[in-house]
Length: 96
Image 1 (cartoon, helix red, strand yellow):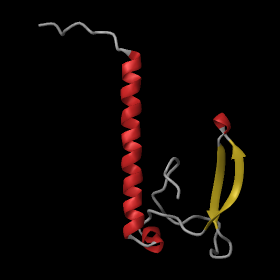
Image 2 (image 1 turned 60 degrees about the vertical axis):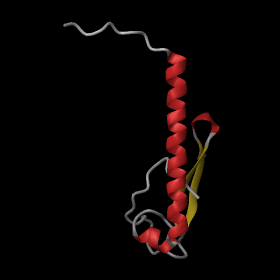
Image 3 (image 1 turned 180 degrees about the horizontal axis):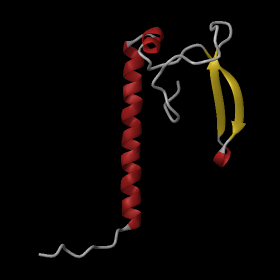
Image 4 (image 1 turned 180 degrees about the vertical axis):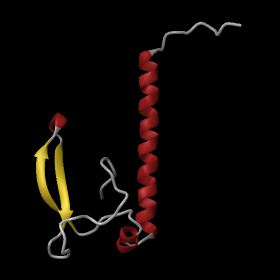
């Protein structure tokens, strides 16, 4: 038996579905972040690798679309090294 014929994808419908899913994902991440912040201290989150504390702006530039990009580094007043501790934070994470 042959597979059913493929139908063309309705691009606007596909795009709106993807945007709705991305919005739901963002809302879930923001809720999770809020719950972590409400139930743990900054030091506890730092020890678990879920937060970085005592950061200062080490650089600033303009990126694509005119977005401002900040490079963050440890505060020299509280850190003896230029390297960040081990963490699970990545580009695109929510910053509060």
